[in-house]
Image (cartoon, rainbow, N blue to C red; front, side, top):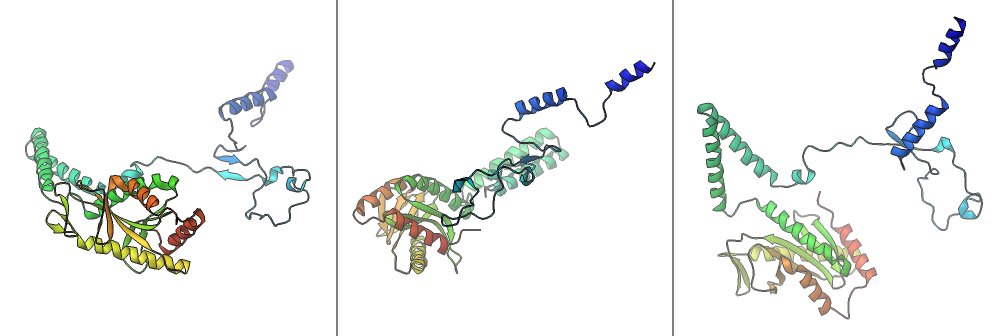
Length: 326
C-alpha cells in the first residue's frame, strides 16, 4: 500500500511546474512557429526588446562617447535583462468598410441611390409583391440615370476636381526622378483658396490647377479665350494667375527674395487639338501631356537650372509657407 501511494505521488506534479523534457518540447514548438518573434513569459500579447536600451536623445558627432562603449574602443556593454522594454502589440482589426471607399466623395451619392431603390422596393413589395418591387427598382434606377445624364452636374464640382487632382498627382510623382518635387492640395493662408499642386524643380516653380470638364461639350480657344461649349472660362484662368501670384509672394517672403511662379492649367475630359497653349498668361495642356510639358521646360531653361540644393531650399520654403489641407 505504501509503495503504491509513493508511486502515485511521484506521478503527480504540483500545478504550474513542468519537467525538463516538457519545457524543452514547448520551447522547440515556440521556436519553430515563432521564429524572429519575441514572446513574453506571462502573456502572448507583447514582444520583448532584446537590444540595448534606446535613449530618447540622439548624440551628435561632437558629443563625447562613453569610454566603456564599443564606439570608444572599449568592450560592448552587456544587455541587462531588467532594462528590456516591453512593446505592447496593438489589437489590429480589419475595418468593415475599405478606407479608400470611405474617403471617396462619391460614396454619399451612391448611398442615396441605394436608399431610394430600397425604399421603392419595400413600398411596392408591401403593396403588391416582390416581383413588382424589383420592377419598381429598375424603373427608379433608369429614371435616375436618365436624369443625371442630361445634366452637367453628374457629380458635385468638388468631386470632379478631386478626381482631376489625383490624376495629376500620379503623373507628377513620376517626375521625381527628374528632380521635380510636388506639394499637393495646399492652402493659401488668409484666403479660402486651395492650390492643387505646387511643383519645384530644375526649371523653376509652378502652380498647377487641375480641372475636369464635361466630355459632351467641346473645348475650343477663340480670340485668346477658352470656351467649354458656349461658356467662357476666363474666371478660372484669372484664379489660376491669382494663386500663382500669391504663392510667389509667400515663397519670396520665406526666402527673402523675389521669385517667379508660372501658372499651369491641366485639363481633363474633352480632347483638345493642341499639346500646350498659353491662354491669358496660363500654360494650358491636356492631362496626358504633363510629363511632356516639364520635359520641354527643362530643355527651354537649360543653362540656368536650379541645382539640387536650391530646389531643396525652395521646396522647404514652399512647404513652410503653404500649410497642408486639413
